[in-house]
Amino acid sequence: MTDKPLDLDKHRGVAAQKATGIRRALAEIENNARELRDRQAILESQLLSASAASWPEAAAKARYILNLYAAGLAPDDTHHRDLVAAVLEDFARLSNET
Image 1 (tube, rainbow, N blue to C red):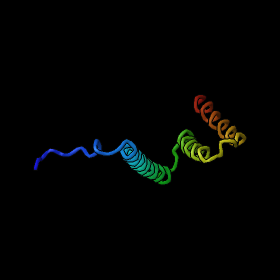
Image 2 (cartoon, rainbow, N blue to C red):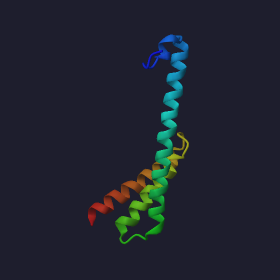
Image 3 (cartoon, helix red, strand yellow):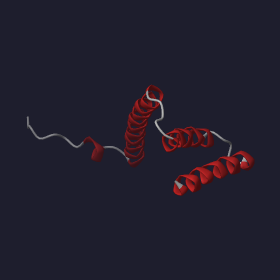
Image 4 (cartoon, rainbow, N blue to C red):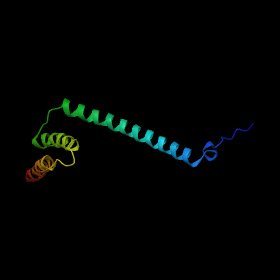
């Protein structure tokens, strides 16, 4: 008996190796998505817990919400996408004026 680990992947067929690769990639993506959701929950908790101290801070909160809203829009909903883009452009323009 040997202490060397056995590379089982090289004893499997190409299809089995591809299936294993896909499962590993999906597991990594799911883990990353879970981490992203956790960070998003922390950010949203912070946004809820503190009132904005200025108009730029309020606009930053609004930008966050508008981006969430826009991400959920159907790709062919150009009217609402245009509205969101216009408001975000207004925020950018007005924040540069102060």
